[in-house]
Image: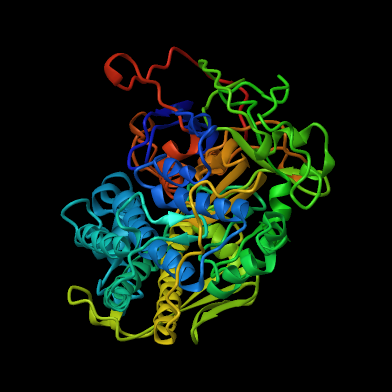
Length: 639
């Protein structure tokens, strides 16, 4: 018997996402899965004709959650196109603002308020009672840090609203946003980011940094608590819970591609390296473009594209050469086939003269500098077009076309494969050897409402997994939270050192409208959901094309037939692959299945649909209408 689940909308995510799945009732295995996004707002169209610096504030409004994500990626694109970077203190403040205002706020919120309820007593005891029984009998390994005796005790405190973990998450996300706003001015849309600088009021800079120090002390204790909780949950689902196929739940459920294709941008520019490239470039945006790989690879976290355990490239300018978007399954007209060139004409080379998409004609027309947004609404048809999300792919130098995944797990993946370390102001935040990553959190981190074990020094080790699975992604988010806290300590100590040296200048001299006659570039910034990527083309201080992707864009991509080689049968985004590679573990009759395992897989990415597709259809009075006239289901199943 076949069971079809249509979950629309999926809750506890940002935006409107539907999941359609066909499940074999006898084996409980998912046979087919599709995700559909039904939003479009056309920000790329709005941006044409605007000054480039306005994109920082406009793209921030893509979403009420990811405002600073887009603002920072847009600022990076503006820096590169203008040929200027901040002074070291400005770079340190940019990094600290993002660490406090976004990462330390967002990761715990995602884990404990949005994803945590799926692993709470209320859900686990009702839908998987055998798992609940095992949780009651399983001691918590990290109780010396989080204070819980059993896994069931953790699950009980994950109950929404009444659970202690839920309540602590509400408290500490508010505190991290408060501290971040000391730099950003407000949240979620920072108003201080400008090309080549940051306009934070530094009149009382020493006092502000001491406030950050006090706040980071308590937040680091909270980070240790959150990591210990999710490390225990991960190990429980790895060692004590199996799928209907008898496989470890944590190692198989919600698996994405095989091998995984991991993309990361890195974040937190190195204050001295990033500041110096503007001087080396001598005001030339092309010369600065030539130095971007040096700057990105000096970041606190590292960029790159990896296939399995092999790095394809560490250099962002090389990766972006082959970065394209298709629209074969998306509700857009194919601008390349329609020969609709962007206002600046078809760009065929990057600023260094290297051919886009490695000279493959006509694929260069699908590069983001050449993209034109042409909406073409229609009914959901799984045999044709069924989503407002486009289909990002990377064309490799050898001609292969691959899908990609991004998120905290991809950032840890690249950090690990880089086999390096990050140290600033004498503080070593993390180090890796190609297969393991170690994170160093300081001691004397006191928070009165957290257990005493959160006060001690802590070294966290993360081992590179074989696959990206639901539980691996959740654990990676908790581990990445710890890494961010360690990076924040490094930048805070560096900023305090700059104050002692009297080096408090933040921004390069810049005035409204100061732009080269023509320039184009990009800005990438790793954010809580993955790689946030912006591409900019300007002429005489006016945008002639601006395209951008949120991390959810490649993750929620619909499938197409563009992928080659080992990915020919896996040419869908990670959301669909994760939903497909699932078994139902609910211990109830098939006609009462809720799709728990499937939505766990989707939520583990923390989708942000508004950022991904930018669509909203408004009717009379400005009200939002969601109307699906018909759904055409493809009966070709993927085993």
